[in-house]
Image (cartoon, rainbow, N blue to C red):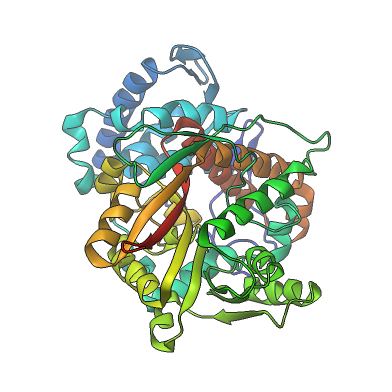
Length: 462
């Protein structure tokens, strides 16, 4: 597979500018827009500078502006501003997208990137004054129309990320090739009632961080934790011998394999050609091809098949559905679920108020990693299912701390595999994009701004 390279800008490190290589697998990144000179840029940069410094002054971080050595913040993880004027200009013109892009160009850096990002992530809703928050809709870029998760667009959105290279993902994932939060420990405590509480609400005990002596390798418990995650979902869905299972979002086939080993028959659908090919090969190698069928299919096409299933499972796929199509997604789950069946989802979520505030906008993650993605809240999942289906959320295991640990390990291994990533044809800019993506995501979960839950749904009459 050859990926078109259209990124021509450069980024700089402390050692000066570095031009991206022209490797055959270089990701087709959107071009970093040059900073347009003029009054608008100057004014927005000045406003951004004041807001940034005011926000940092309240945070437990240290920001060092070069070349003056001026230090901002209350002390904590260190951010170094190599080119402050560029950061403020990009932040002023493009908000948080510009903040991330200034990292890509090397305008700023942080040795402990995830540690630094965790601090502002914890207070993201209050970093900007309320009066300016209300202007968000006027200054935040809107999601491009061709990224909306329609049937016509979804295949390209999925391919942009998941069809990069199976070899790339194998470099930082564990042997199960599970690209979703692991569950390091099934012990949990009951959660209190309140916003976001639905059904039986449990919170997983936070895991203890551990590391393999060789950063290129995972500790042995990662594969076990991924298997534990999958097995709990299958248990919640009631998958046993003879169960008819539908999986929406195949990944690289691990869940389908584990379900088939229980004696289930599995129909799993995906929009990723690369994942489909490797999943089929892994399923065949396991000797379970007779129990599992893998199909290149949009979830919306399931309605026309007329098939029903005793269990529906889906791991971190709802994030790609798009808020306009949540109703469609859950109505289809309702339609294909046989009487007495259960649904088990693993879903990344965000607070309901932040979901409402950011709906329809474009983020750095959308632009550089996941086109069309948008995170629901647990409340909106509960609301949509109550209003548009016979399904009800009857159980929730909240496990955000486990995702923070999963991402920490992925990022550590990804960075340690730098030479191998470059050997695949990706370039230094790709390394910087993906390090920021993994660290940015880790910070979201570590701060509690993002969460991930296993949600169990059943019909109200059950």
